[in-house]
Length: 447
Image 1 (cartoon, one colour):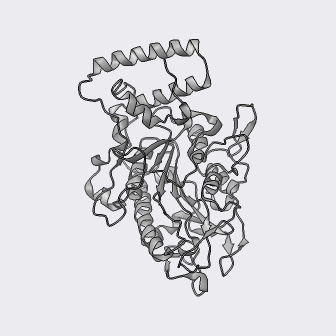
Image 2 (cartoon, one colour; image 1 turned 180 degrees about the vertical axis):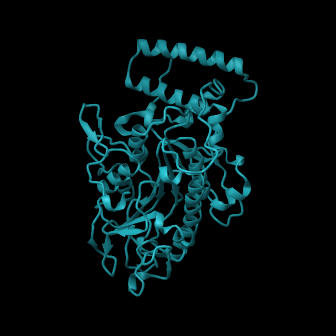
Image 3 (cartoon, helix red, strand yellow; image 1 turned 90 degrees about the horizontal axis):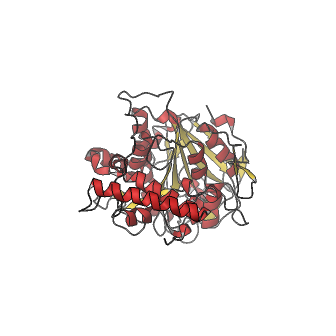
């Protein structure tokens, strides 16, 4: 038996190569969703990370500077929280500001896309011998739902800006790697229609159904044969790589069950619901996130700006940010509305962030450059005391003047919001105990 290179062999590739061999595996399905909306005290918590690839501008979104030369072209708008103002392009979010906690004092030391992406996902600066797990992998392990045949960590349309290790499970191993959702029929997840393109983005997971000519009895026979051969191989060739291959394959088999595969099938949603999220990949990705959370998936990451430039607005900042903000507002606000209607918002924490912020001062190309010194992130929903801004920058937006927040503290706060102890230790291959976060939760923004 040939052992493939596990480090470059993804769950998606397993699905593609195994469809002809397997098909849909038998497994128990999830409990039925509650008929009536309302928080279920027994329901496990979930987290949705809204990742803004390229580094979003805080000065044009959640920490505006009206009246200052750095303020730019956009106006502020009132929200449903007196004194808390957002960008004029956040009409939907402004009506739900009571559910949002804005961290206006974020500060890091990484101004490079890949390094900043790794830092914000893991809490660790890149480099060194240890490959740390992403916060998605850590929380997928801590909140693992063993009643579902779906992955515990799903990334929707991950960005080209991402450092691959930033989404990875690190030393936790492939059991906690992210399953990716992208454009149907594409070789890898990538850009899809943005708002105004006139079509709904077609997101999903390929190779989840039985191919023509393969019936259930043949599938069962092939699966039994594979299990027998795999057990024999592992007995004679025990290794981490072989076990990793088996883990990915078994995960793919579970996803091929028709009811598990249906979680990614947006055609099951009414057209008006799909339209309400927005036509682009971000809006449709938020809808997939809602469907996955409903089915008990603990961690979902959805990317906005996963094309060539995204939020990396070194030029023509205001044209790009207006479009991105409107797409963000429609998808995010609809997501929170639907989660609330289904009684899920109180058990689902939403995190909005990118790899860094952008310069308050505007450059000669009407753009804003990389700026990790003073910027914004947001936590919302379950476990979060919304309706407030934590931290403050000066009138120019150049420095944090109150409650500077480091990434470890943000991640520790996120952990606490979803009911996970941030000091939980996982062990590296060298038996070194590693905490999920070395920071301190910020009690002011927690319920």
